[in-house]
Length: 388
Image 1: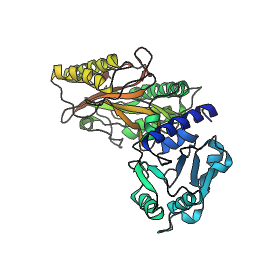
Image 2 (image 1 turned 90 degrees about the vertical axis):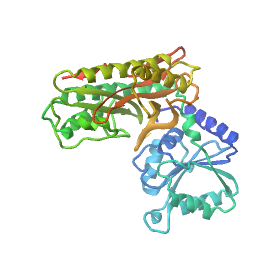
Image 3 (image 1 turned 60 degrees about the vertical axis):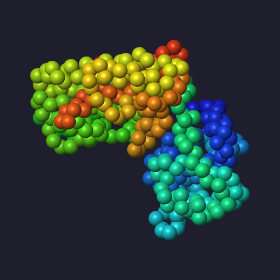
Image 4 (image 1 turned 45 degrees about the vertical axis):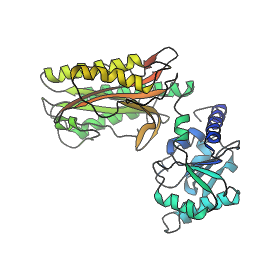
């Protein structure tokens, strides 16, 4: 386990307190990161039905898991064996039979079928079919959206979590340094990403890396005007820019970072835009302090863009921590105008300054931790346009 039993117990108490406030007696959490947060469970089993069940008065959650994966739950979680509930393989791909038929049976056996049940209605991997199975099987239950209840509890990190994120940051720096070195004219994008991934997995001598919840993003040339493009077998071209967005992952905690590389002669337009982008990013960082809001950070950021007449319509940041595919974001605060979430010490977020202009763009980002007096950056890596 990455954390003490006491920390897991404190997490459970915070979740149960939030459940009481929302009138939820039983929470079914399908979010993979939330399952990890509540129990320590960690395996590539999220492609099929699994969940953590939290009763508002329970001393431990229940980890409901496919029988084939139950060994991982016994190994990875802090739970007592009786609180790991495996379901049989007969439910796997035998439509219309479904694992949620088993979950309904368990809830009925425990006489929880008349409770107010909170569901993560917008969670990855919780399908419409899962929801229909619960509704049809538990006719006397009252279902309500838990509205990312556990995600919001995760927003403020413990010191132990911060330590893991700092380890992930060291791996991010290794990956980015490798990216700067291997991106050269004539090199295939896929070859470059192969080296980047190697660096992210090798990590440091002390902290080995693992798979990230998002693939290394590598828009290049005209692709820098788009977002979330991945590598192809095309070669890098002299005179073109490439954006690298990646994250080291350590014990499932992430610290993303983005930088931009320009191959060939300096391009004043790109250099000036990168400098203005970083000025806006730094303004946001400087305003990130405890007691301020996400809106305050966004206003400081956009004030600089407005000064230069740069238009950006997308958000410029989001909270981070535990991550599983397809996302390393926590789905809570956004660094955007109007988000009045108060920044508290050990709130952590990824602030992204990506500027796109039709057929080109530049980007830089930082993973940020709110401290008692201000904020600090997880990574230490130059933000200016890297010209090769």
